[in-house]
Length: 221
Image (cartoon, rainbow, N blue to C red; front, side, top):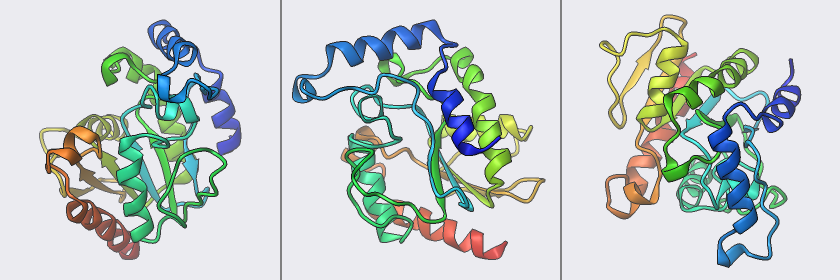
């Protein structure tokens, strides 16, 4: 299976009734600021360099971000913090990410998520994450990344689950890094949500250090 074939399957997924209802309702009702835009309203596939050695795993699409634009971390506050950092680290050709046609190109990095549909209150259930896990597993098989950057605890725990790594040994903390039994490096970061960035829990300097470390781990391989 290719990434294009996998993404076609992801986009057509309707496994989780609660999420299907929510994402489609949001796409119909819309936010006032985007009332003239056509919302994506479907599961959001991964995107980036198909030869990427670095895989970024987030939580799930934002209701008026990725669920509107159809591209991971595009059009919301998390993306406004993420893509400038990727640009500074030379993983992205530009710092802006507002639509699927904005010219953004990623180099040596691919961005995906633990959940593919916008969940109510940004909280997918464990069962919903389990339904999405096979998609993430297939992305890992296709890409075979050297480094996985987990944006948030949920993404980190999902990667540990896939690799059958014991969470008692691997603990989430910003900047923590682990080399799993298969040789892949896992790097932890706080999620670039507005809640984290506006409070100073995650600063630009802290985030830049994550992408510098990702480059160093790739070079080690």
